[in-house]
Length: 638
Image (cartoon, rainbow, N blue to C red; front, top):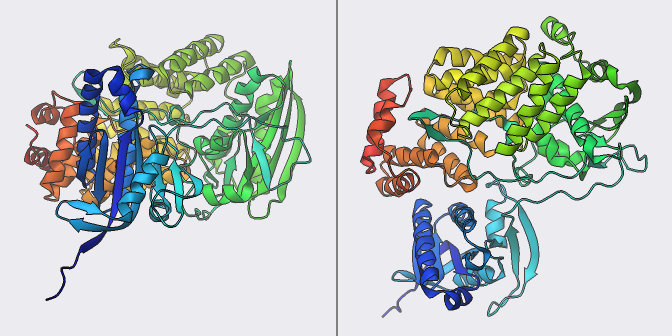
């Protein structure tokens, strides 16, 4: 008689436990049990949502298996992000922090249980993880390194208990990191052409807990924040394949180094960098990387070859700024990333009052060096200085810096500076556009209960367009307001106008994608969202949402599910992506997964009803809306 064969299979195993659980129980048993129960409910739901199966639980530990290692890691990151948010409301001595280990390996199956080294390694990895952290094995890393937008730190080969061979271990970086302190400025000739330290280091890269998906006053508002208000993990594309070079001259403007000896002048060097980026971006004959992706390298020693691979550009513009009293010295150089050689370099010593003429000269030098011809419209647009008032310009730069923080306080500080700018120069169109954007962001994030906030944003954007119809930001703000007002044709017109005026503005493309999808142009929206991602390779989670939304509106359900799950890694507590998952799973007939997603919708929006949702939608095609609502109801949403 043939011996009974043990069933085996390959599985991704997630092992989790609470660091310091015994201490928590000793301090307060009832409170600890209450927290554990609540956190386990969150974990159970997320494991189910990511198509995992809970194998066993004992005390504070959880063991789960997944058919997909990508699902396992996405689930772990979402769990830690979600529980991190919950822990933030607790005092440090009461926080319950899980450690998670993930392994991909062969396991033995007996009934509902799994056994073997594959499981044991996951448990050992869990013990190596930091509280609130995740450790993965080398086999897991090999499978996901080019698939997920995460940062990994190699921890070396670790010898672990009862495992014969050392295990390669990687840590998933869960928290933002601050760039190292800058050394010498870029004028230091000892620095070789291949490795450079860019700008100064004061930026912290964060993942937002929320990205502005709201139901405010019963009206659905989608995503229109200025992307400068979004920070993205600097590793967002670290493990992706090298990006191909575009079919036109391509440039990244790296943050110019402030060598004034005064950290307070940082706003000026950053402002100059952003102005040069904006000017070059408006040239249709160039491909220009977004400011957000270039500023990832601020304060870091970089290899131009790495920039070529990660940003997909042929050229890098870099330099330094020294501003003293009413004088400014700017050193700039254009570097070929394929060779490390200089295409053009120059040093300028000018009175501060000539700053706009100086920026124009640098732009012209770059255009000439790259043999790019400006169109007639482009030539005309560049003939006008943004303002003749240097003090107003200084306030504009001082306002742009806190606005980029993406906080309520930063937004308020920016507005104060911008109001001073327009008071000094009532004809300063760019300042009006940025000022209008602060009101739109305030309304959008519900930082103000004033019903006139949105109207104020609209008025200021209109004022900016009246003064200068060639401002992409002003048209972008108008497009956002028009969409909120359900004026679809006007929203599209403004969104497309913004793209025409600045063909390299990633933010404009992302906003346009969100306008086109509900208007019945979902296939176009997909390509537009991808264009935004290419222009801003270190794109914020907002872009992932825009692409997932476009896939959903095109009923490309598998793509919509995969993309929204990527988004939820960053922002698990936003209910609309869970709603998209509910609808997409239901449309595919995967009702168990649809119900799990619907549970998340109700957790985040307990009063959600399909009737209210339907009334507040503005999808042009009624049949599309009806299909959407029916799918939600099939998943159990009332």
